[in-house]
Length: 97
Image (cartoon, rainbow, N blue to C red; front, side):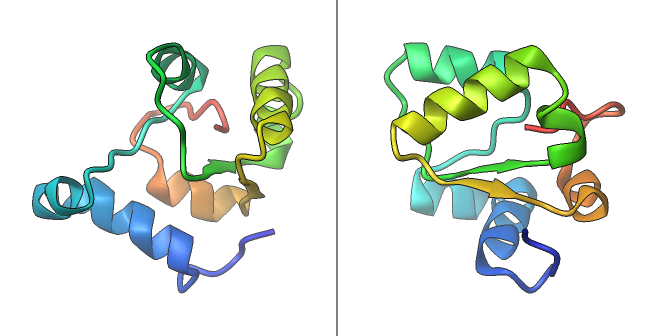
Protein backbone atom coordinates (compact mmCIF):
# COMPACT_ATOMS: atom_id res chain seq x y z
CA UNK A 1 0.00 0.00 0.00
CA UNK A 2 1.26 3.47 -0.87
CA UNK A 3 1.21 5.56 2.29
CA UNK A 4 3.80 8.26 1.63
CA UNK A 5 3.41 11.45 -0.34
CA UNK A 6 7.10 10.99 -1.21
CA UNK A 7 6.28 7.94 -3.36
CA UNK A 8 7.42 8.45 -6.97
CA UNK A 9 3.98 7.61 -8.43
CA UNK A 10 2.24 10.04 -6.07
CA UNK A 11 4.71 12.77 -7.01
CA UNK A 12 4.12 12.08 -10.70
CA UNK A 13 0.33 12.27 -10.32
CA UNK A 14 0.57 15.45 -8.26
CA UNK A 15 2.81 17.03 -10.91
CA UNK A 16 0.52 16.01 -13.77
CA UNK A 17 -2.49 17.43 -11.95
CA UNK A 18 -0.76 20.73 -11.20
CA UNK A 19 1.24 21.46 -14.34
CA UNK A 20 0.02 21.54 -17.91
CA UNK A 21 3.65 21.78 -19.04
CA UNK A 22 4.43 18.43 -17.42
CA UNK A 23 1.33 16.87 -19.03
CA UNK A 24 2.47 18.09 -22.45
CA UNK A 25 6.09 17.00 -21.96
CA UNK A 26 5.18 13.52 -20.73
CA UNK A 27 2.14 13.27 -23.03
CA UNK A 28 0.14 11.96 -20.08
CA UNK A 29 -2.98 12.86 -18.17
CA UNK A 30 -4.72 11.81 -14.98
CA UNK A 31 -8.18 10.24 -15.15
CA UNK A 32 -10.40 9.76 -12.13
CA UNK A 33 -13.38 7.48 -11.95
CA UNK A 34 -14.59 4.28 -13.53
CA UNK A 35 -16.37 5.95 -16.46
CA UNK A 36 -13.38 8.01 -17.62
CA UNK A 37 -11.04 5.04 -17.33
CA UNK A 38 -13.51 2.80 -19.19
CA UNK A 39 -13.81 5.40 -21.97
CA UNK A 40 -10.03 5.65 -22.25
CA UNK A 41 -9.69 1.86 -22.48
CA UNK A 42 -12.33 1.75 -25.23
CA UNK A 43 -10.33 4.39 -27.11
CA UNK A 44 -7.24 2.17 -26.93
CA UNK A 45 -5.41 4.04 -24.18
CA UNK A 46 -3.15 1.84 -22.04
CA UNK A 47 -2.74 3.23 -18.48
CA UNK A 48 0.77 3.28 -17.01
CA UNK A 49 -0.73 2.51 -13.59
CA UNK A 50 -3.90 2.93 -11.55
CA UNK A 51 -4.17 4.18 -7.99
CA UNK A 52 -7.11 3.02 -5.92
CA UNK A 53 -8.57 3.26 -2.43
CA UNK A 54 -9.26 -0.27 -1.20
CA UNK A 55 -11.97 0.87 1.22
CA UNK A 56 -13.97 2.36 -1.66
CA UNK A 57 -12.99 0.69 -4.92
CA UNK A 58 -13.23 -2.91 -3.76
CA UNK A 59 -16.72 -2.42 -2.31
CA UNK A 60 -18.26 -1.00 -5.49
CA UNK A 61 -18.87 -3.63 -8.18
CA UNK A 62 -17.96 -1.49 -11.24
CA UNK A 63 -14.71 -0.37 -9.61
CA UNK A 64 -13.77 -3.87 -8.48
CA UNK A 65 -14.56 -5.28 -11.93
CA UNK A 66 -12.42 -2.60 -13.58
CA UNK A 67 -9.49 -3.31 -11.26
CA UNK A 68 -9.73 -7.04 -11.96
CA UNK A 69 -9.74 -6.40 -15.71
CA UNK A 70 -6.77 -4.04 -15.51
CA UNK A 71 -4.78 -6.48 -13.38
CA UNK A 72 -5.50 -9.27 -15.86
CA UNK A 73 -3.91 -7.01 -18.51
CA UNK A 74 -0.82 -6.60 -16.30
CA UNK A 75 -1.53 -2.94 -15.59
CA UNK A 76 -0.19 -2.06 -12.14
CA UNK A 77 -3.07 -1.33 -9.75
CA UNK A 78 -1.60 0.30 -6.66
CA UNK A 79 -3.46 0.31 -3.37
CA UNK A 80 -3.27 3.81 -1.91
CA UNK A 81 -3.92 5.09 1.59
CA UNK A 82 -7.41 6.67 1.64
CA UNK A 83 -6.27 10.03 3.04
CA UNK A 84 -3.47 10.25 0.48
CA UNK A 85 -5.84 9.30 -2.34
CA UNK A 86 -8.32 11.97 -1.23
CA UNK A 87 -5.60 14.63 -1.37
CA UNK A 88 -5.03 13.76 -5.04
CA UNK A 89 -8.72 13.55 -5.87
CA UNK A 90 -10.38 16.33 -7.83
CA UNK A 91 -13.94 15.33 -6.92
CA UNK A 92 -16.13 15.83 -3.86
CA UNK A 93 -16.96 12.12 -3.51
CA UNK A 94 -14.09 10.09 -4.98
CA UNK A 95 -15.02 6.73 -6.52
CA UNK A 96 -11.80 5.24 -5.27
CA UNK A 97 -10.20 4.63 -8.70
